[in-house]
Amino acid sequence: MVRGTGLLLLQPRRDPCPRDDVAVPSGTKEWDFEVEVAAVIADDCSDLDPGTAEEHIAGYLVCCDWSARDVSGREMGFVFGPSKSKDSATSLGPYLVTPDELEPYRSGKGYRLAMTGSVNGERYGGGSWDEIHWSFAEMLAHASRDTTLRAGDIIASGPVGTGCIHELSEHRSYLQPGDTVRVEVDHLGAVQARVTDKAEKFVPELKISRSIDIAAPPSAVFDVITDPRRHTEFDGSGTVGTMTAGPDRLSLGAEFSVSMVQFDVPYKVTNTVLEYEENRRIAWAHPGRHRWRYQLEPIEGGTRATETCDFTTSPRGELVAASGWGRRDAEGIEKTLPRLKALVEKNHRG
Image 1 (cartoon, rainbow, N blue to C red):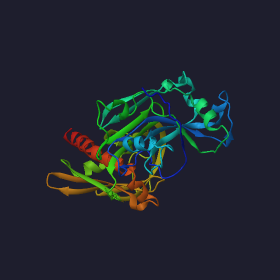
Image 2 (image 1 turned 120 degrees about the vertical axis):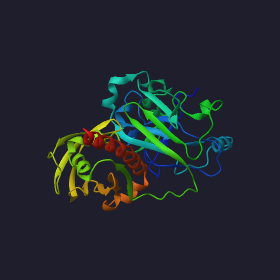
Image 3 (image 1 turned 30 degrees about the vertical axis):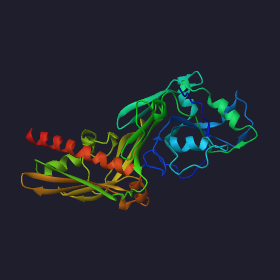
Image 4 (image 1 turned 90 degrees about the vertical axis):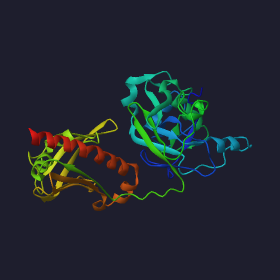
């Protein structure tokens, strides 16, 4: 059983963000993931002592080390070891957690925090951070011997417990295009990535729109959407909380603040209504400047409601739409509209 015996020094390249797709490199049929955690170096340092090395850690990240087992196996048999890395080698994120926040969980050579890996929603394996064979202090002391570590360098732990398919190869198949992998560490969040074919060309939706028919007039639907206190009732993304400031009913130019949560981290967003047509259309934007828009069309027996996430209004919209964040927004809309339908129809009947 591998227990965090690897030491990997990463430097910024084109590694995937925590929701980006990951393409299977050419020449491999044994594409694998590794459940790891990584430390980010806070300052330039060298020849560290294990007793004080952790003072040079700015924080920790979830790390998914993607591995081509058959390719690396062949290369490791050569005297010089692995010959090259790949752009899709490591997924990191979703946020940096400082050591003081984790101190209550300190145990053994790490922290008493569960680390898990799953494929298509099924748990494959994992372990606990405190099972790693070498502490980060020991790894940093080794990595910095006669070498300067630079601020921003990233040291990865290696897989914990049964946190890779290689450890389960008698019972699990290696990854295939279409699989979704999730690597999660308690209090650090999760990396979630869809495995794709290298030849697959993803065309991002710059306007993600979905529609649903509601058995109620447009005015009834509009009344619910323009009440910011009710947004948490029909939100399907799992990110929208209660309104913290704003009017009882939205209008053009109105601002409203909402408590949010992403990857278990709470924060607040202030939105501004930029489009408004009574019983027909409303849209608001937050500081990222892409817009959430609801359009209502009268149909026989009720209303066709269309929700749109419009990235064309944001300076960085194309980059966001092309990332895993764009697909997550599409999934959120697809879950939100049925909830909106049920809420409006219940109110209308009552």
